[in-house]
Image (tube, rainbow over all chains, first blue to last red; front, side, top):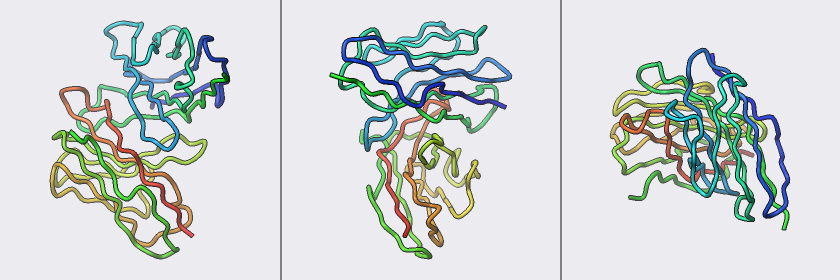
Length: 116
Length: 114
């Protein structure tokens, strides 16, 4: 079984300061991990994806995430927050071993507020 | 490409009414899914399809039906709407070459059942 825990339901940062959104996962195998972003009243957009090629994954809009197997974590970071980063962020885990349709598990989301 | 499209964007139903949420994709993706999003619960899988003519249940299938007669379309039917089905519904698609689990999402349908 797989699961994902987003450790903060809300994070507030000032514009220009670093962003850290925390995610821990549980999986019986080497998982695939994702971060998605959802702006208000919009669909989900893929930020980045980890598939074991490299532990540090760079995504769109300056975001990156580091896979740490020993800590079972996949935290999302950005060096400097922009007002347009205000959104909800979802950490997602999947087990790529299974054939056919690939079910994924979503975290409950972290709402990022950026203060001017 | 339009990507994944969903209609309608908003819908209000009365308890007991039926309706169909439409989803279409123009990327020739094999896999399509329906999720519902509720506050504090992330996204939960309702039904999914691995190709035309093949569908299966997800985590929360009760009260919903699906069919997939073409690769492009994957409608979700509510047979007798209940207030518990008030939610935001997202359709997603993916394909084997990029990874079955790398999903592209539509903009969502906001459904209220009174």
